[in-house]
Image 1 (cartoon, rainbow, N blue to C red):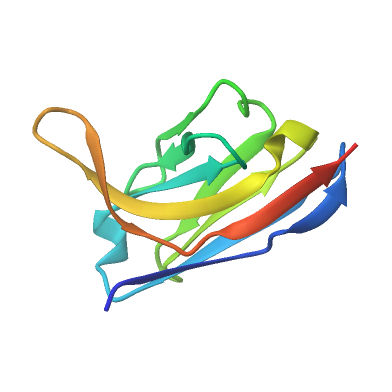
Image 2: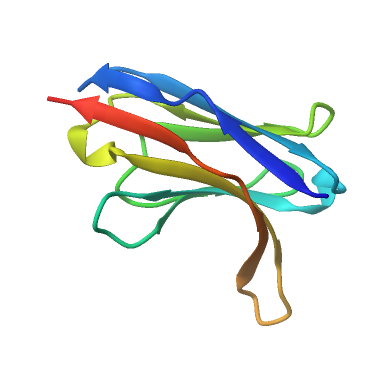
Length: 122
């Protein structure tokens, strides 16, 4: 019964900003690292950002570093992605995911949301 539900997607022009949100339920939210991924048409899914269980550590893909900011609110069981300076190449379906650091030091994502569409026009 774990659910991750993204919201906040939309269509906007290059240079604009958008804030995505992901509401979690059915899991002990504060024990999971949270990540954002995206998949553009005809391309593979790619990692965008990750935030630790406490929110003290974040990690970003080079393509979005300096433009996107991930944050979380454990009390509300939500994770957000603030996207600034959007580019057409940011167009994709954005997914949030819940994961944990495995013994091999690799993050494993167990739960995924349904995705929300972000379209950036030039």
